[in-house]
Amino acid sequence: MTIKTAIGNVSGSRDAPSVTVTVFDDAHATLGYDAALAAAIAAAPATVFGANLKTAEIGISEQSRDAITFEMGYARPGANTLLRDNSVQTKSKKLYSFIAPVGVFGVSGADETSSHANVKWKLDRQGSAAEFNSGKPVAVDPLANSRNLRYSTSQSFVTDPYLDLVEDMVNRGVFNAAIYLGRSIGSLQLVSFSVTENDVGDWSLGFGFGYQAFQTSVDVGDGVLIPELRGCDYFWPIEIETYSSDSIQPKVKAVVVGQAWPFDDFSQLNMPYPGQLTTRNGSGIAGTITTLEGHGITASDDCIIFWDGGTQIAVVSSVTTTTVVFGSGTGDALPPLDSHVLVAKYVP
Image (cartoon, rainbow, N blue to C red; front, side, top):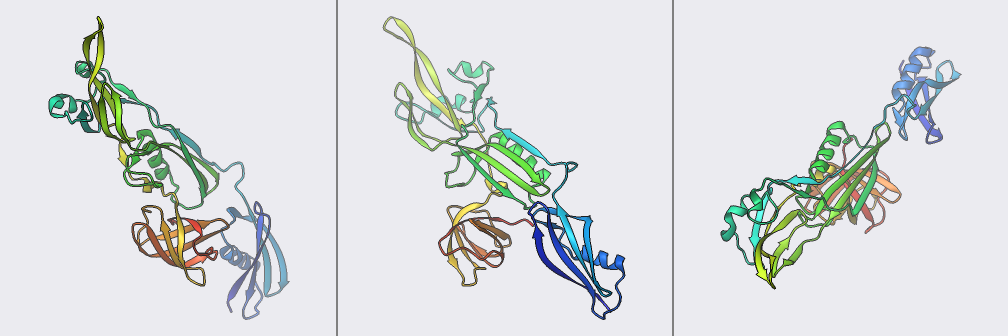
């Protein structure tokens, strides 16, 4: 004599779905109501479409003395559920010294580091060499927010430590330490982040990036050039006073360049990476995704794949810098070969 359960179909609406669970005794013994209810609750999914099981909203239909069908009700969290919402953006910083000096350059980009060694290592003031010791910091603005990416997820990596981590990255104004979203190292800055908890475990994440492409032969005046300037760098001129046309005029003698903003690992954001389904098996549960850049997924991870109209969770079997080979997928069958997809590390 054993109590068995059978889960039926989902019905109702997305906000208030229901699932039937039939409990029966395989030896046709009479069921006890309390034991049958406990078995139904244990067998029913904890959530359906993000709605939570409500044990007080269970319909009961006794089919016979040895079989009872329960209709398990689900509902989204009510007004007493605390949902989180937060946003942060990078502020201008006071620059007292460079994180790392790049160099001092003169006319036509000539390296004048040796002539200004004392300046190179004390890059904390703007203007002339005398002003370098004046005690005033310079204000450095972050890049303008030029790209916003938003996505929704129910993955459990969105925790308080994760939110603290991303907020800290924004506060520090970090740049990409590796190619990210197809952008070169030191050209992409994380300048804003927002998060909204739509439901328990249902998040909308928003990331704002500023982009500054590498610049070469940047003319700062008077024939002084910066050979190469990254988005994470900052510069100011070293000026001297010259007498010209019966007046004293400032003239740029050289330019001091250094890294003003820090680097960090953007893979910590766990955003999905854009890619293409470059191989696909016939059953649609295995294949290869080729990404546009390094994806941060390892061979010991599971991955989650998104595309227009479906989602699949799969086991990663091998990776290269720009490919993810996977199999044993569960969820929707993969889209056609060469479809564009998004792939991310899966955190259940």
